[in-house]
Length: 185
Figure (spheres, rainbow, N blue to C red):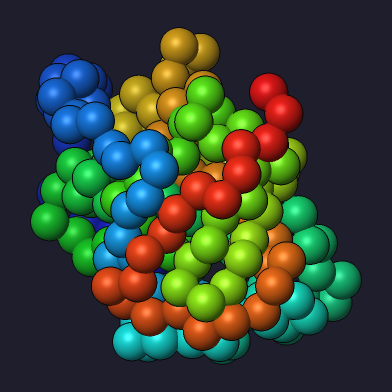
């Protein structure tokens, strides 16, 4: 497993300052910045485009190879500006999120049930929490994990969100990601 570069781990005070300085993300329409497929044994690929499907979700991603994949966690999404600060020069692929975007993923902007158009596909925000885990702490440091996980930051969903594919379609780096409908709060 790729544990990241511990020399790049930021201390809590630095992470706090970087998160406090985050510019506001777009709320209605953003851009897909990176696509990432998580392969076996932590391998990562960054295709220029993919065809999202209801059954297989993100082609080449290990989710579809799972014995009993849960639709509530088909695809993971994270905000690029958050990731860039936490990664501190490490590759964004290390996070393992399928879609890296510049859109506000907070629960106030995208309540569960919100529907988004991503390129030619439609996805729905699920109720499956996307929280930092042991791997996150190993890759980016326990201070980073603690900073994104505070009770006051949880609604911001700084670790990201899970979505499920509603309507299949092609998605490419540079495509728009836009809110079609916000779900119930």
